Amino acid sequence: MHPLRRPRPLARLSSRVAVLGVVAVLLAGCGEDEAAQRTPGDPVSTQEAEVLSQVLHADREAGGADFEVRAPYAQGAVLTLTGEVDFARSIGRAQAVTTYGDGRPEETRTLFFSQEELYQGDVPGLAEALGGAGLPAATYVRRPVTAANANGTASLLDVLVQMVTRLSAPSADDPGSFGAYTWQGAEQVDGELASVFRSGTGATIAVGAESRLLLRYVTELQDFQVTIDLSDHGEREIPLPADADTVDLTAHPEIAATLGL
Image (cartoon, rainbow, N blue to C red; front, side, top):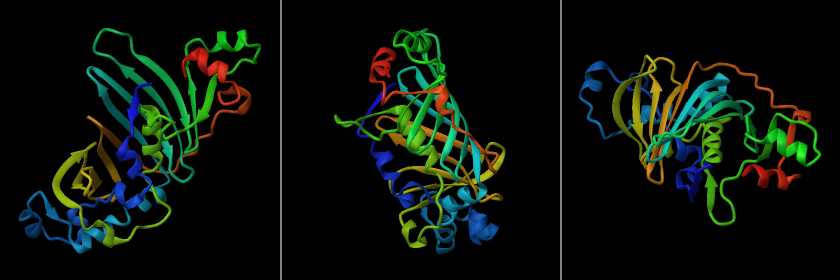
């Protein structure tokens, strides 16, 4: 998996306030005339900041969502995750597809993840590696999710799944923490009118004018942008793979080495 050197945007995700803050102008109490006079780059109003402070908590209260993550991390190479997340338990599942522009066939993995662990299925050579080591058959490999290893790099896959699970919060934030946010305009996201805001660190966020839910989050990792779209918010129940169908790569580093994981 493509490595990242010190992914600073991910580090900022440890602070909920630094990650997101969004709301539609219409929800902030602005009339149509006032909204029409706004210019992209205008600071958020006090009323907007109040609603901004509720956005991540609204995601948690909704329960979960479908998501798509798109990360064009190299020339012609794009990693896309398509799945669903349970915000209440910080658990998700997805299909990860890497496409290349140089004629190489695409790579597909089935993923399950929590904030602590990542499960990968459809791993080429897994059955042979387990058989050769005298281990029981398994469908998934499991390892800890890490933000960075000893040399300061992190797997792009780890970065992305952590970004998804952190798009919610158990409580509202302080409205005073959103003073650096600016209004950027309105756009349609998956058929819903949304207002777009920019954080002080340059991330852009879109929230539905009617739903008040997060619809899109865009940030930069090194020299490429990551876009996360959320849709169909609602309760989710996502069971993680059973231990009997999983091989723990921490307990079996030889399997990880054989598979290049």
